[in-house]
Image (cartoon, rainbow, N blue to C red; front, side, top):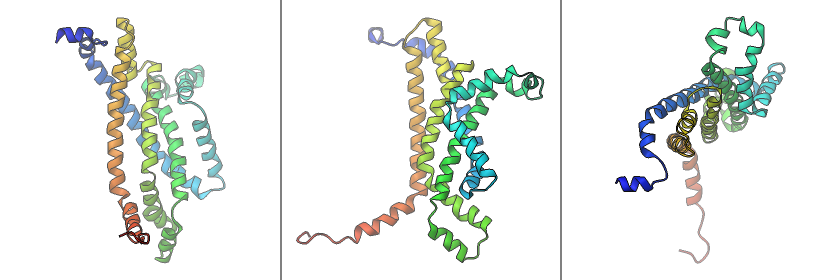
Length: 253
């Protein structure tokens, strides 16, 4: 076994020795990613409703927000918040400086939340706008108010149809979380870079980080595949009778 390990290109013993640090990095990565997704998702729902309803006053404001955060890189947004906010004296003297804006973790969380909130807003806006007219007309025929139609028909339908696209946003946000390693946070990539720098290595830290990201993405895709089977099952059932009713060509039994 020792002879086999000696020929292996990676120092597995060194990786195992420092694997507790990688587990800490996994916790930081997952915490930042899913907390920002939850906060950004909660923020995106009312903003998407505003965008879909084309409110005369609020719609332009939300459009500017989504355009700015979708049009600039996440790295730039994080740097502006972490390095740029402290350049203003009124920010340093505010009550937000010591508990929030002076801490790298909070700056990363705010930047990630605003970024994913912008993308999720436009994703949900498209899903709301594509709600089948028949569903809305049926709700109107039953006497539902506009608020009831939104909460009971439009939003649930939009959430279900947005599941496949939102899975990509979750994965993109996970990949984008590597930005945290550039502002002193020890996420998965940050631990990998630390390992390479401490022991003058080229591959061990980065390959270990890549494998951990691969495992997390695999788990995310499986969860969303289950969600699609559960909540989009009615779409598959709708196609089956059509396929069965197609008559075979002449001469084919």
